[in-house]
Amino acid sequence: MPVKNKTDRKFIVVTGGVLSGLGKGVAAASIGNLITKAGLKVIPIKCDGYLNVDPGTMNPVEHGEVFVLDDGGEVDMDFGHYERFLNVTCKFKWNLTMGKVYESIRKKERRGDYLGKTVQLIPHVSDLIKEWFFEIGKEENADVVMIEVGGTVGDIENELYIEACRQLKRNVGEENILYIHLTYIPIPGHVGEQKSKPTQQSVALLRERGIEPDVIIGRCSEYLDEKIKKKISTFCGVDEKAVITGIDVDSVYKLPLSFSKEGINDIIKKELGIESGVKPEWKKLVDNLSKLDKEVTVAICGKYTELDDSYASIVEALKHCSANLKVKVNVKMVETTDINSPADAKKLLKGISGVIVPGGFGSRGTEGKIKVIQYCRESNIPFLGICLGLQLAVAEFARNVCGLKGANSTELDSKTKHPVVDILPEQKNIKDKGGTMRLGAYPALIKPNTLIWELYGKQKEVSERHRHRYEVNPEYHDILLKNGLIFSGMSPDRKLVEFFELPKNKHKYFVGTQAHPELKSRFEKPAPLFYGLVKACLEK
Ligand code: GLN
Image (cartoon, rainbow, N blue to C red; front, top):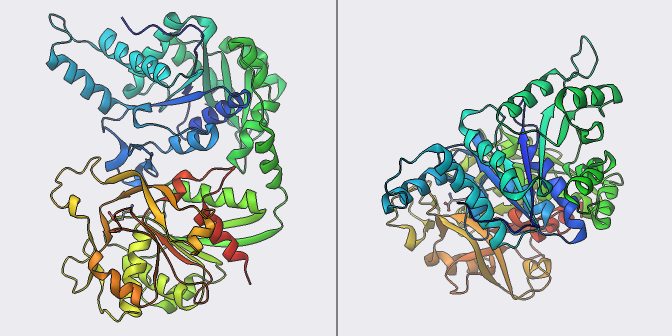
C-alpha cells in the first residue's frame, strides 16, 4: 500500500494534449506562483518518460539546457521555471524519469521486496510512482504538490505516470486534487476562427485513461471567446469558468497575471479551498516590462545556437536584468564556428553592446570563441565568460598577454604546450559519463574590493552551481596573476579559480566564472554577474 497522504495536502496534476511545446512547465509554474502568494509551500514534481536516468548525457540541441540544482542533480529545464516562479530550491529527486523508476523497481525486485510476486506495471510501477509523490510531499512538508506529466496524453512512455495520477484521486480524496489539462486552440487562416476539436479529442484520450480534467487551459494567440468556452465546457464536461486561455505572451513572467485575469484563482479556491493571487512585487516587475526606456544587445557566442532553449537560463537571467534595470535587452545568438580572427569577430558583433561566452563541451567553435574574447578584451567590450567561457578567456589571456603560444585547455587540445586549463585531479580516473562531473553548489571565497565582491554585495563567501570537469591549471596561476588577471574568487582550498576579472582601469567589464550563475537568477533577484554585464553595456 502506498504511504497515506496527509489529509490536507493538495495535489495539482498538469497534463498536456494536442502538441508538445505548449509551455506546460511554465503554465504549471505560473499557477504555483499564484499559490505561493499566501505563503503556501508549493513543491514541483516533473515526470519524464525517457529511459535516461537524467538529461545530463543528452545534447542540449536535442533536449534544451540541462538544468543543474544545488544538490548536483541534472534535471529537466522546466525546473528552471519552477525555481524562478516558486522561489524554491529544487531537488534531484523531484524529477522522475522512467530511467529512475525502472532502476528503482529492478533494485527492489533483486532485493526481494516483491518476493513471490510477478512484478507488473500496475500495481507495482504505478504504486512506486505514487509513493514517490507522497514521500516528496511529506519530506518537504508541502502544502501543494504540483505534478507535471511530460509529453502529450497518448504518448506510450508516459502512460504509467498518467495511470498513477488517475489513481491518486482515490488515495487523496477528490477535494484534494485538481487536474489541469493544457491544450492548443488553433485559428486556421482560412476560417479565422478558434477551433476546439483538437481539445475535444485530447480530452477524450485523457478520459479513456480515467482522468476527467477540472480545468482546461487552451493555449491560443487570442483570448478564447465565450462561444468556444461554452463548446469546450459542453463537450469536455468542465465548468465554463474552468476553461481558460493560455494566451501567447511576449514574456513568460506575465502569465501569472493573465491566468489570474482569466479567473484561475476562483477555480483554485472552489476546487481546493486555497487562496491564490498575484504577488505585488511580481506585478511591479511585470509593469516595468512596459517601461523599458533604454536598449542594449547582448551576443551569446556559442555552438548550440540552433535551439534557443540550449541557453534558456542565460536568456532568462538577461530578462531578469531587463525588468529590474528597465532596459530592453536584445539577445543575439552568434555561432562561432566560422570566426577566424578578431576582425571576423568585430564584423559579426557589429552593434553589440556586450558578449557572453557560455558553457560548452568539445572543441568545435572554440577557436572562434577565443577570437571573440580577444576582440572583447582589446576593444573594451563588456564580456562575461561562463564555465567554458572562463576557460577560453584564460587561454586567450595566456596566449596574447602572457605570451604562451598555443595555450589551451587539454579538453580541446590534448597536446598543447601550455595546458592552462586541465582536468580536475579527482576527475582523472572517472570512466562513467552520467552524473560524474563536478556538479552542484560549491562555495567560493571572494577577494575584497574587487568588482565581483561589489556585485555580490560585498559578501566574503558566495555559492554558485557548477557542471564541469576542467579547471584553470594551478601551475599557471602565478603567470596569469603576474600579467594582471585578478582571481576575484577562489575555492576555499585556494586551488580552483572560481571568478576572475580585469581591473576596472584596464577594462569596463571583463569577467569570468567557472560556475553557472544563470541557474540561480530570479525575476525578483537577477544574478549579480549578469546584472553587472548589462549595467556595463549601458556605460558610455
Ligand atoms: N567542458 C568544460 C569542462 O568540462 C566546460 C563545461 C561547461 O561549460 N559547463 O570543464
